[in-house]
Image 1 (spheres, rainbow, N blue to C red):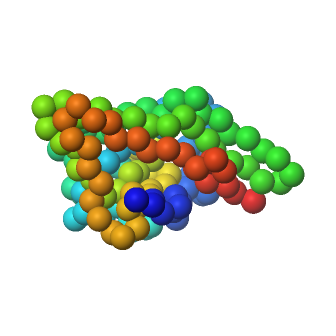
Image 2: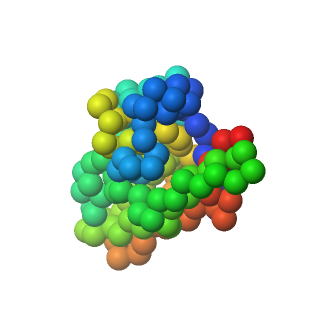
Length: 146
């Protein structure tokens, strides 16, 4: 299964310049959404604008999990965001999703940053009870701005 590149929501650059989003210090989270979600609509601005998040349960907590080891780097006029692999562990049932969304959990209204279609076929991605769902960040990072 091949995931799409991360697509950046339209409002991200403006919110970063206005210091609403602080990619150096804020807590960024990754949440999982179902096929019927509107996560691919780049005009969405806030976490609350999204529909059809994976239900709370089976080891998934509504709101997702925090990204770890975030690194915001700048080299030769290009800035990039990177993090460790994100791991969800299903308990008592499967975790099924189509989209992964990264958002700022610290800022008011929880602004959206980017999303990825987890299988470009497109198909749902699932992990059964006792297995793990890995969302591995590309070696080039989550996204680059240049």
